[in-house]
Length: 394
Length: 181
Image (cartoon, rainbow over all chains, first blue to last red):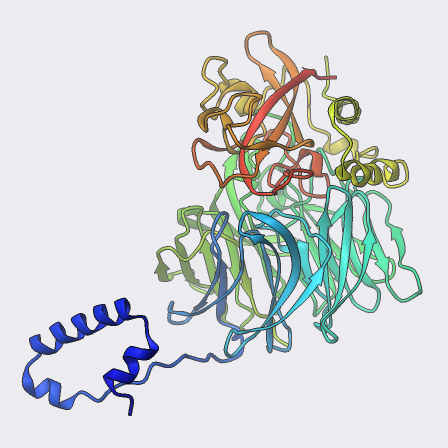
């Protein structure tokens, strides 16, 4: 057992003096029988289970660091992933790791810039490796700037320097592989067996095939108006169907089946699917529009898309949602409209059979709703105002 | 009726950029993007006409209808129609002046805003001031004609501190480039 004298040698004297003062005062205030029953405790560190389907990972938001892990059932925090300012996080589909694409400087705000994918194990949340990469975009709040291949073996990190390119990272060997120039395109989508795809400023979808010695870039015909009616780049991707679902500012919904030549569906109007007038781009036209930050969430098992909607005019695409619209994408029908007590900026849904919804607002307050009754289960102050990530079934 | 021409806006900006910016590493990288533009256009050349918004100055957005020209420390000042961030006018700087110790980014994102005094549209370059901690004053987020990151020159979420000694974001200015179109 360590004596006080031993501890004195091993700890800074001032801190110890404070500790002894506090300990002395609390001991003297406690009843004698309580003191007798107290067992000395050991300081230790918690471990946590692998990512659970009902956990929500909530980024602190712009200007803050850290991504809090909340258990959707209890509303309690389980831990925090070390995400630095303007970083992006992804969950290993095998549940073993959390990956953080980040940029840090050797002297805080200045010094040498270092860009990397940092690897944390999911049990102890300890840093396992840093994979150095060339630069990456600094933006925050975007889901498709750091995506993993469906098997979790490759990461794609978007870069804007301001030339546009993508860094390919081998997560198995933990090595940077190559940088691929991709002018005019961003917002990445994993494309299984091919490489990745990306939305482009000419309204097309580019596909980058990685199988050969050199990456091969092909494009679809332009199908959307990138400047006039953009597709939100926080779209959703369903790896079970290998399909992305796109939503435009006006409320047009497209699906894109991944493959060597992705197939884009004809769009349908979200508002028309709810039985109201379709959204338009002209000003002075008051209507329901999609908006927020992460304004769509997909429940993969049912194919239901949840969209944050607000009443406003065109170009109000960052406005917080006052309703959630639940859309059956295959049937092209809005099956339910759920009014929100307070406007919300981000939405995510757990991938369980009976899902939970997590929403937060720009102040950083979060709520958890039952995905069947839409009753509020928990309210969490200071949950974080940033992106919400959920684990997907293997 | 005059329409906003996004292609012309891009060209004007590149000319301004070429004329004013010193030679740095940033130029070679930007050059890469510009050179590649004819193959993979950075600016949209193909649009679905049905979805084309009315970009005439007469068809004013909600922001333009409520904009004012007197107080440049308020989010509704006319030039701020597509700004996102802290106003440098509230941080010890000015409309085209970075606060002391901050460094202006040589590149910017842009907006096309209507001056309510003459009803005309002007091209505004939103230039970030960099290298100091976030100012934190007068946070605004206006979104007229603001796009997503695959059209970066009209996106206001990107940290535009390229080519500066530090990429730390401090505040944003709104530099008048000239009449739009």
